[in-house]
Length: 226
Image 1 (tube, rainbow, N blue to C red):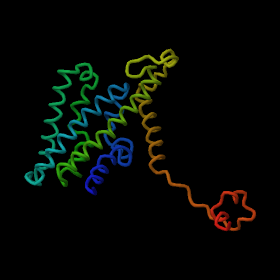
Image 2 (image 1 turned 90 degrees about the vertical axis):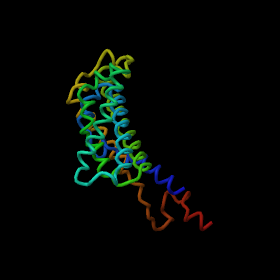
Image 3 (image 1 turned 60 degrees about the horizontal axis):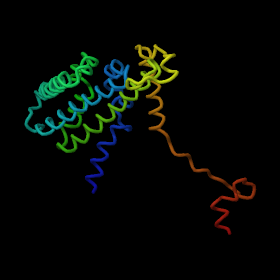
Image 4 (image 1 turned 90 degrees about the horizontal axis):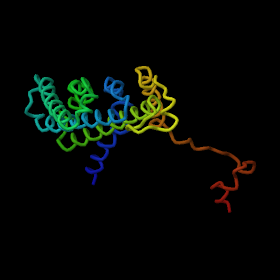
């Protein structure tokens, strides 16, 4: 039971608490470059998740066999292999998405999210835990890109997932699909997420006498006297 809870925590941490994009500020290049549309964000997020999951599993399984002196080149070769595979799959089955992602699909090889999880987690933990870590980080990255892409597409193009939005489609704010709009949107989303993540419960109110308190009718102390 405790192990299941721990694996659940490995998955959930990447969604908000340790979101790779909105909290740890990793993978900024694809986040800003491909999120002019929500679908591009989903595609890049899922492609990165595929590479992250595959590389984490292989690196974790081979962690004791890879010599420490060549671990970085070994990690790059493993990651690049999965990037090549996902590139072939997208080019063959979703060519429009492949063209939209362009060079940033290839650059997944040097994405600091993937390499960071390989170095910090997969090379030090078992296969199951590494897979859960990859799934959580991948979901968090995908959600961040999808949210970014949705905001920029709706406001900047008046569309969402290719569907026209009334009023917004006739009055788009084109700056949101430009680099400046990407930086602004990312900053606002990061601020909101950090506010939610660091939100503290209200401090307990310490009161003295109940006689002059306007809330004495519903106070627990007053109820105890009765």
